[in-house]
Length: 309
Image (cartoon, rainbow, N blue to C red):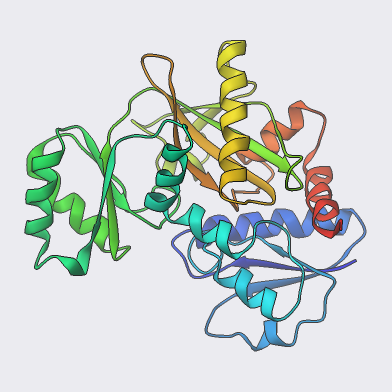
């Protein structure tokens, strides 16, 4: 097949996307496909408008890649692509909206409140509301951002204003939620809509206090234990909740669902990643390896699922 790989982009996750794109391009070539690599920039759409390919593999992360915008453009151009569509991508990217959906359907989430910046006269007004509703520690983060960019765990009240300022620099809506300490795990999901399956649960042990940008992407920043050393019952629940969350948002082909296991062994969902990192050493390929899918075969499986009627 003739496949275009979109990678790079202009979000804060550009460097990660460059690595994802490089891995995907190599895997597709190893599988015999003709591959066109495109370092995507939304200000230079001519290359996409003139694209003549069988399929697009989206290796972008964050804004203009994971939020449904590029999916909408490809839909209008009638070009098939790997992964979730417009609505599911947009919902997964909107943490507040997706949390509402999960909570309504019985998946445990951390208590949270979103704040639309321009509905307040200043950030001090937001800070007053936060102080009234939350006790430290709590988390302040942009509502639509990936890789923990703009996220602060507020442990002392005097840091609230700075945390709001940092989050507001990345988004027009910020999300404040109770801090849930515990074990960080993630569950890859793969399959066509209605017949998805969860891959082995991965436990992430970050070298820093939490799974921040450096822990995710710097060499040696975290340790991945797969399958995670949790009970059979909890494994079953995590996998069922992951598939359920994936389906509730209408995701397609693949996603990765992040959780915290709290002190009482409750699985608390954090978010669904519709375009998780896909470097050869990323979490999703690590889990797939355990069930006998190497990196090249995994990428090819995504292609096969995307072209099935």
